[in-house]
Length: 332
Image (cartoon, rainbow, N blue to C red; front, side, top):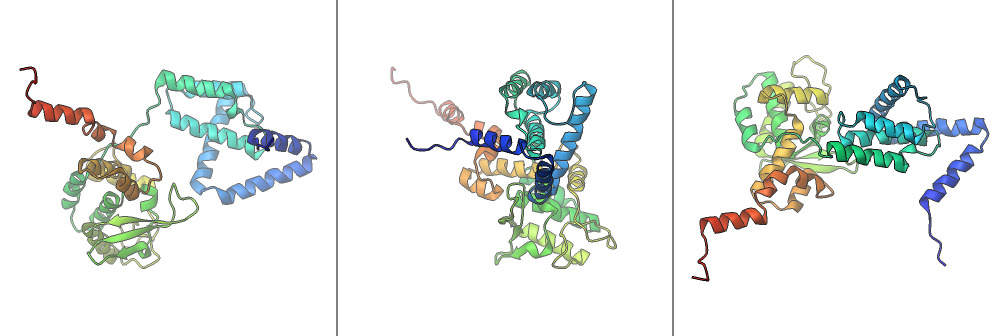
């Protein structure tokens, strides 16, 4: 009979072996795990992990539970129920990841894999729904209307370049603030490509490229010249001429979008969603949309375009064709 590897059984055996180690050796492994985690995870991931564990520990203390691992599955299930309806299911799943990682860091079995916790999460989804909140779209017409109204002072030059880059490239805010002047590569037709060294879905820096239109390129070059930026400088910095040449943070990018579009519900992600909407309206195929947004699966672009796709469905096409040009009744 061929051997079949059982991942769960192997994990249990490993944990049992570590549990039998002398305390000094076990602590050395825990310390090494923490050191390697600092190198393996992105800084934002580590900050998020620590924030979640602080919130979870506070909840445990307030409800009379011990926050130190090992934590019983029943406690985690109660926590899931307590945040249900206040947090989105995706956010709850992220919190469960952090609780599981806390246990992994101590070489303890994760309570989050227990069926009781899985059922608690399913119950929350069933009661409150599992829909994710989507950023409202900012389509190309919305963008061009705003940038045409911007003038030539320092802040307006920077914001015009930022908004057009977001609209052209479909980049996330974290990608926009990471661009350096050297990442801009001019093309013969006046457009450019932007090199994305690292992103949310590329933590190990394989790299990718995003498109920048001629309008976007001209706006970015005008800003670079105005600010006197050099090759290694971040493209999107503070607009004051004497300010340090440090990249904007993502919260500042969000505030710029809210101010320029006079809307409190938009962000740089809105141009990513709006780009998908425009592409579906123009009849672009899903493969080209995935390339533009650097997605490796069709799930997210299809989710962004659900409203547009409903109007392009077979039902919509049948209704439009037959209602506008009804065929003759064969029975007459």
